[in-house]
Amino acid sequence: MQPDPAAAVVLFSGGQDSTTCLAWALRQYRRVEAVTIDYGQRHRVELECARAIAERCGVPHRILPCDSFTALGGNSLVSEEVVRDGVRQDTGLPNTFVPGRNLIFLCLVAAYAWQRSIANLVTGVCQTDFSGYPDCRQTTMDALQAALRAGMDWPFTIHTPLMFLTKADSVRLAVDLDALPLLALSHTCYNGSRPPCGTCPACLLRAKGFAEAGIADPLTASPIR
Ligand SMILES: [Zn+2]
Image (cartoon, rainbow, N blue to C red; front, side, top):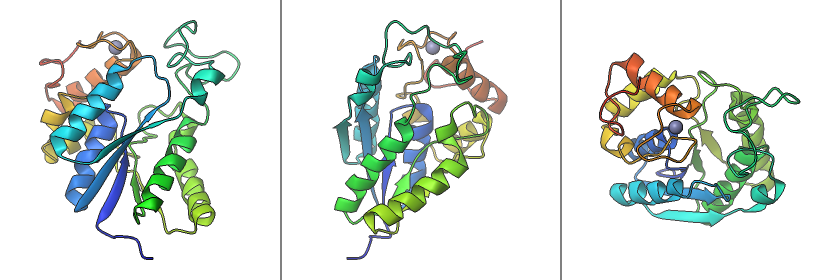
């Protein structure tokens, strides 16, 4: 069995970065599929955004359940009681960090791709602007790619088109890819608000990127201050 070189699977959350990656993949590959992981995120709107964007792009979209992170708790994306948007004193990591999340997600995406003779995996991880997440770094992706290749005996390549881009660069890339209409459907806010709250770190980072790129965010119609 040989991998289909014209095919890719995108790890797709419905957020700004993975939406830009989906648009990137659609330029690179003839056959693109999107996988969203339902890990018990408190903000179910993310799943709805992902579904809507995939439908707009006409790509097959699969939502895979992975609810162990809810059982583990300890981060503000799945636990009501954890204060949002702070830094944990014990680890120095953002409390939105879900330990192991990207590793498990990419394993699931790889298993999905393997079943479909696909070796190209695409993810929107980025270590430039917000490198508080150790599972978003290039070293992690290199190691994971090696593990996936060995563990599934399949020539996986993890593509990370945003890895070394600033948020402003990512916005410019989205413009180049004609992806702004898709970003209008994407979700970013840590508070799960639509329209976005404009004050959480995720909203502020998104707004900063659009402001620095000199482009209005189609989600908010005008840049958030
Ligand atoms: Zn927000």
